[in-house]
Length: 355
Image (cartoon, rainbow, N blue to C red; front, side):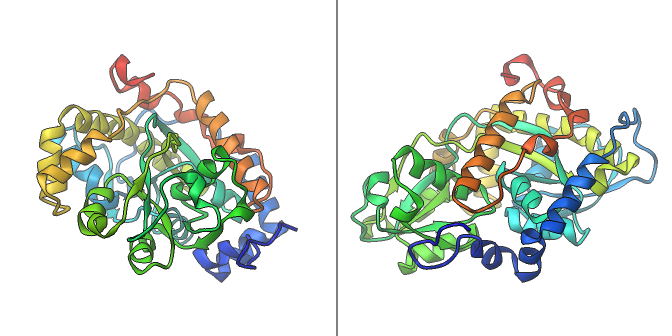
């Protein structure tokens, strides 16, 4: 049994609070775990079709409309299939629920949601990898805080989302600082609750995306809120899909056609920061140009490795870290990668974006 957190809540209760009772039951069931393993063992390994069959469609998550805007501004070729819906879904738990409901075919997330899905017994696989070399998250303190370093997290209430990138960033930061889970109080929340929790003092610290930080500091910096920078990265920005979708030859071919566009769209955004600042951050996110430039300065250059070896190693380290804390069962993540798609993103971009 996992040890209890300082608040007296078994760590696996986080799963219930974040994903709902039905998902938790599925995730904690040994039968569900065996079912996922069986699905993985029988996964389709058929070669990808060279052409997307007519009439094929996909439901794709494009959080905040970023990918549609990238495609539009970059004037990329028309996709050889229909996007029946672009869903504004970004948080890992929400994506998993949408996968389960069959209302979503392909999503863009970090490395932790696929691990969480595997733990719940839901079969899904990673189909594209973008490597992140710089931190995408900063730790923000509540107004009036006396916290200045990660070492100061000891005894404090920390916003923690087990099924999202922010969760693993926090766990890795604690490990680097030599703090155990029992040295802090992990407060189970989803990332869309972090800002409210900070503002109200429900938590002392929360990991915020770089895109959120300028507006937060503008509002609360004068009241004693601050950010704490670390070198902890969430290495993987990825595309993933349910196994049932990947077992459909037509949909698998459509995903293979989408991956190069996804990679080229990110390269275009990186190479045109001024246009992106104005068209996305200012016009659609209501940020000032100065705030937009601040976000862009922290942005990661997209990197699409021809080999997924580094990604698999990092994903396994992440799964082991979660297992050590009692958040998931120990697992082998190698089955989470569908190698039929390996290299497709790298082939679509210039050499400087492959390493």
